[in-house]
Length: 318
Image: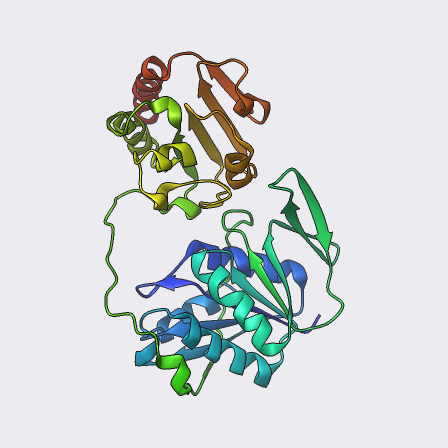
């Protein structure tokens, strides 16, 4: 293998955890591990990647890249790929990555493998059939664009290295500048972002109303967890779509997933089935969620969740 690129995902000048997870994967693939950083005032991130063992980092730093837009990111990355010719390009399977990765692949004539969750002996592993099965996919040509599911690979640890930094000249075509982001409306929360959370507490139709999600928020705050929701809860208007876990929502892979009042429809399982440990709480002993759960509690969630919250408070204090 020649050069393996990690396209850093960052927000407000900070690397997202999935970037360091992709560094781990890049090392597994082998070859020269290099990074790409795109944004405004992001040169410091290139040095940070070097500390995690990335040998060389290309930096596209430009005022017009302050906010992400599909056309501009695609232009920058595609031009760089055509010039430097890496073998494999790793991009996070996030909302942003899923947006510009296929466009970049089409622009440079590359193959693409999406939402990979493993790497074995030269081939990539990805879920199919809504997570019911896995397939191994290899490449017959390069470059290859690969999108990587967050929270699957361990984050790289610092090696104390130093990267060679190369600044990239940025130029756009008129069509790249047609879309301009004027404002980003932020949702302020002290909880972790759903796709990167190590623990997630999700609620479904069994919550019976939006006011009852306060039970899950209390538990999540004790555990340092994110709060998610099933499609049924979102469709009912109890939670915003950004909280939805499932085939038409977000795909997550936490260490611990607590499903509360969720029946376990196939669309929901597709979004959380790769969680390392699944705990289900449901009053229906025949609920489909118990088929995938590592631990299950059959009972009234309105009694069980407050008890769990209090017990976790005691345990974590001790």
